[in-house]
Image 1 (tube, protein in one colour):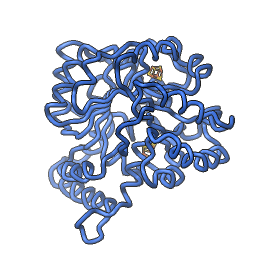
Image 2: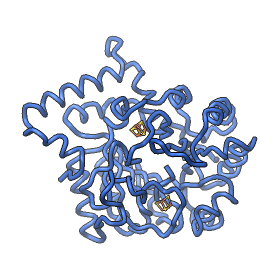
Image 3: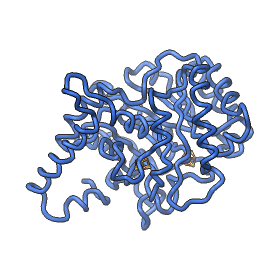
Image 4: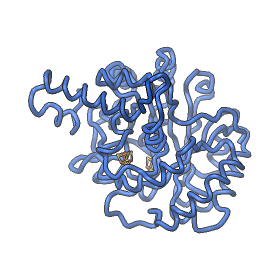
Length: 354
Ligand code: SF4
Ligand code: SF4
């Protein structure tokens, strides 16, 4: 499941752990990506309006997600583990389509990744219940996309309605993923009501928040206006204080307010890689695909990475994480210029990874 464009609150960590990402710097230096996103299937029983995964430009035009071949059974398990071996990530997000369509395969993949110390996040509409055993696998989390209060969500996401989600999370633990759209900021107390409802559910541990990220030139009802963004940024500190389960890492509001202007300025694109359902095509420049308007990027993880960019590295003589990423870019570029034939880099970033 892919959101349009995450109580009883126990753990409250930033989506990207600074120490782990700094460990990941070594992986970036060796040409790997600490964060991997996999569209594990092209199938989804929902038809949410505005779903970017099925948009014509998601894979850069030409081919769409529905036209790709995808895998199932033993072959899917084998190919995903092979991709993980190649990319050597620290965390893998499984999106779709609807990942739970492949829950049998995921029940084999997730324990395998956990054994290797890799964290996994499955992002779902919860139209299907996920296996309870997943909650007992270390380093595995499930995030359910809920697009607003019951009337708006149910209209968009039927059959993955509030009632269906509540039924399907019984005796389980999960997180909620919320993408804030313009209308949610227009009604006073909308987000308050939303957070009050979901953080009161005993099964819900954390709420991941991101902002609707439009494509360049997009004019839609979901896109946040400048006034809406301002209202939201004023409201978020109060909501975070009232609902500790809301994930909002330090300084992230400042980062939300000043996102990168282009993919080339985006820290997240340097530490992540996204693959479509054929497990070969790369989704670029980030998991949104197409031509996202970075100046309005609302991806929580990208924002956290942006925040990380300015943090000082402990015991590094005042070096900031951003410096280390620039150094790693330079080293990887030098290595590529010595070892890759002309055009190989463009080819690799365009599409076929294998
Ligand atoms: S549930 Fe399916 S249709 Fe809806 S946003 Fe996710 S991938 Fe798109
Ligand atoms: S800033 Fe980065 S994560 Fe956000 S839309 Fe642009 S490329 Fe994607």
